[in-house]
Length: 594
Image 1 (cartoon, rainbow, N blue to C red):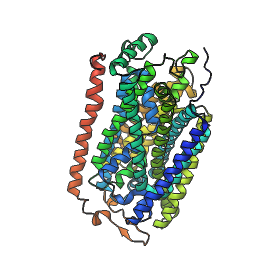
Image 2: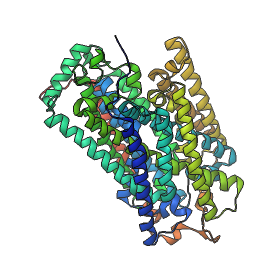
Image 3: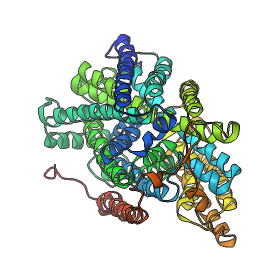
Image 4: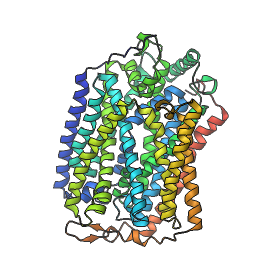
């Protein structure tokens, strides 16, 4: 059975035109947006560049959160799990990956309460615990940034290559270059405004796919026809890892394991990623909680709609002449699935070259909007937590702004080089997605304790982080060898070793910090965090709570309780009550439900 490489439906010129041309267009748009903001009184300083003067409203906060969380990985992986597990994959992907954003609203409001003048969460770690803990968490934070951008670039570049034949290495370098070009000029506020447009375009394309597949397509045309095609695929393939090999049931142990891994490892990503803390800091006090909750709920619809459309299209129509692999008389290979090519192939099946062009635009929009958030988040860490903290403590605003600009360029170059190295080593999107929790899970307990526990001290948080990481790596590699007989790139990227390694890291780090905090409580009083001040270019120290009356302690306390209540209800509804009751019942959807 031939597995010759498929010919791309679009020309290389289309790939370079979108990546370079749209990158230039958005750079010009960013310059225009920035100039408009400056004419309206916005100052060109580092406080504006990094945290947008802490004045972003609810709508833009939600849009920023959606944009930051809508990676190329999101669009590609959601379709991949739907292709693998059917509707179970779509349900669990959307549920388990939207809850992190809503849960994070609790940390966002705690930052407003405990350290309203902070610029990064690492600044909070340094002030509370000291240099050793600060550097340790900085390593894991930047590692999370690196893994996130690598997954975004690897997925996006592989998709662009399959659609246009454009060199993967060219895409890996040109995508961050185009993002850096407009991020340098705009800063956080202008980037959020531009990313709003990115997200709107992504939504339009997703809805276009949905309407076409379920209303006008000659190949599908209705939910009922899709159901019939999925039942036929069940009989034809007879290998779906679900109850009775059905594509229309929630009962799938593999999908449930994937969901647990995703919710654990990507909660760690969100909590460790400074770009999410940065948006919480940038939001005005009244917008932090509703912005993140609205963003999480809105984001749910994007992967769920795309997965139940294009992921299921790939399953249903894989045996038709319109599907790209049909001419080779085969299904998609594991390498193609792992590279995230389910979405591009499904789009070509439904719309031909038009579908390929639509996915090409999706890849550019999702890559650039997510990478811009990562660039600003990581550059703020470098300018505040490295440059000002360890090299120039007296650095003022203009110097910090220059450091942020240099950091954006340096990070873009590093990320492109690192992703190129991973691609050269044969590491794909699926590998990065599964193993990220090894690096992010062990930090969860210490981070939560930082914002909620006065008993947790530097010994507890440092010990829990490194003990959890060591446990995570040991369990991960040991089980990869035990389950598959060898430790290779292929085996360590499998779902089970990554899941159990992540769970072991979270469990051990939680146990360590609880035990040490009980034996040797720190009894922290929070005054040192409240004493942080914003330093202007003239050397003046400003307390935002004094200048902004919206920082009302009682109002923030009520918002914190609201965040806890709403996130608990939504987590139970979206992840426990809805999908897990259907899972436990072994429910298989009928055609009448469709």
